[in-house]
Length: 207
Image 1 (spheres, one colour):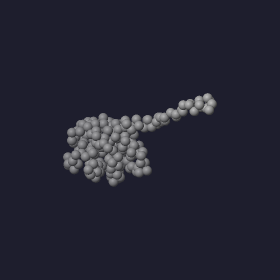
Image 2: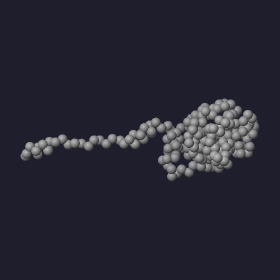
Image 3: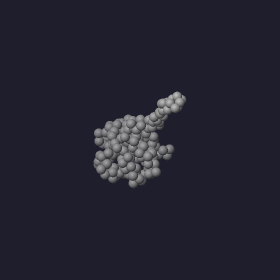
Image 4: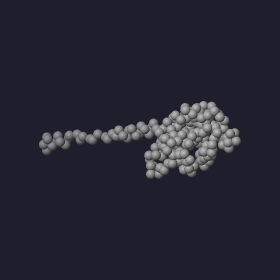
């Protein structure tokens, strides 16, 4: 056996360096670690299962609406920030509350009731943009409804309507972190709103 043969046999075997996790996996892990439960529910509802997504309401760019505040008219609510941790179904209407307003108030009341055991996760709020006082008999029909007088300019700036509607034409959904989430269309179908609300309640682990 030659020296060169011994040298070749004794040569150390070079091992491949262990593969490191890709940067994408590290970023994903970090995002999952930092993501809030609400973000996770958005991801589950709108990304993981897009084939099952048939949402009726318009999904809005998240914006913080907790700063909407004013004078409590029914209940002791002074700002939307006080409802953090709850889903909020929001109606905007002047104190006169025409037939469309009454219908929207009725819809949000009934939709909340249909959530069954989850009803305590959902609050109802009527934002009042004028100086009037709602009909006491109307308020009596909506026990638990929070009525908050807020300047109309602040409402318009916080709730993005369409080119042909105003904030008063819609029912709005706010998530438990105080972010605007959905806008339902004018003269909305309450059964389709109910399905959207049921979906987000199932997808979310908070609120």
